Amino acid sequence: MSGLACLPMYDWPEERGAVDALWARIRAGTDAQLPRALARPASEAALFALWRDPALVLSQTCWGPLRMGLLPGLRVLAQPDYSDVPGGSGPLYRSAVIGRSGAARPVPEGRAAALPKGLLAGRVLAVNARHSLSGWLALAADLGADPGTRAASVVLTGGHRASIRAVAAGRADLAAIDCRSWALAQHHEPCAAGLVVLGWTAARPGLPYVTGANTDPALAAGLQATLIGMGCHPPQEEFA
Image 1 (tube, rainbow, N blue to C red):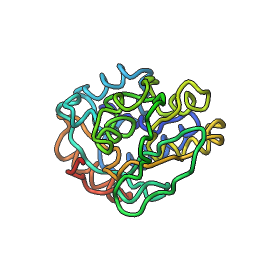
Image 2: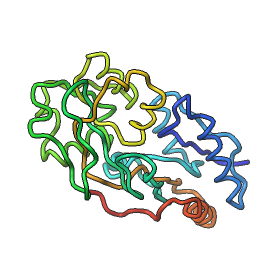
Image 3: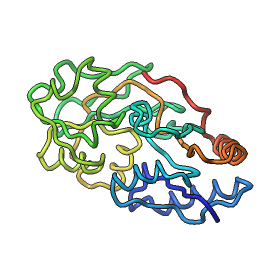
Image 4: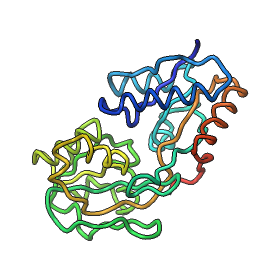
């Protein structure tokens, strides 16, 4: 077995078995020698190091760092399907803007955002990372402004689950959580039961599957064919 593989974006402890099963399906569908076990970096720094490792054959990442040039050399292979969770539609996803109280807002029709006027005014915003599309950049694009200039203050949490907990505990008032992470929280995070979706960001391409720059083209093509055969979508070039 050779190379490195990591599927970190929804690898919650409660979902670890499902993530391992997904990797087993990908390995079974690819006619190549692939690592049996997934790498599981213990920190963001370790994750970025893995994304930049020449041995990387498959991972998931975020369009934010990709488009910001933080992950040079990665090639997008496919987009997962988000149709099974509210806020997802094929290869597109949204972020749910969550808070402790207020009028719940359903997923909007079409692709546009549905964010109440003055949503951030006077409130503390919890953010997983400023390079995150779902947690920060989508809000910035939809608001037409740096979210930090609209909110009273910003709390950096390091992860969507930590942002959910920060809102529930009162350390923050709002957070933008990608729709699959929000769906996972409703299953696995007890504090999510006391929160409400106050708005939705616009629909954008979700977290892509990527391979490293050194991956053999035949292996990259095989992985892409396997992923698309499993229900994923071809790469989405847009970023809006």
